[in-house]
Image: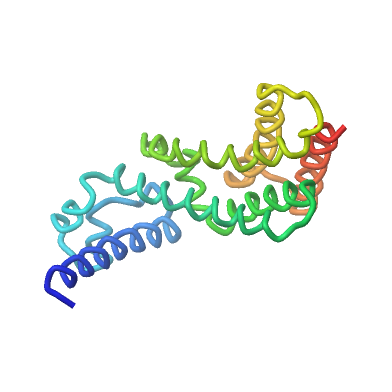
Length: 199
């Protein structure tokens, strides 16, 4: 390996270390505890080194947001690909979305501005459109033998997303009910919307 490649690998490793440290801080103490000085202290760098890679806390959160969307999209695609029927695929995709929100809670908060007050979530806009496309494509398959407008397809998607995301948000700020009630509401909402699409 040449010196140029070694330098690039070192830079990539440093960048990953910074992002990992930032996420660990948030997991331990919440988003309000995240700052560049704390990151530098946790990984034994100086603050100027952190700023070489991220010019602000917002740019760092923007990168975590982008990574969050990439992980979520992969989870949804994997879940959908494991099912045979379109209905089963759509249900599995929404359940993957739900599970991601709680297994990657801090990333989800950054992606959708839950307890994170900064403009970095705008950086995920392109990825959020990609997310919507995964679901609207599946809805389009359900109604392929019917004359259904794009407006209706998008409305069906937003109906589902509003319920799932709303229920997640309620739970992430510790105002949700029991897991049994959450799952009942989640499944009923998804099934009723799928049924209304397929009719």
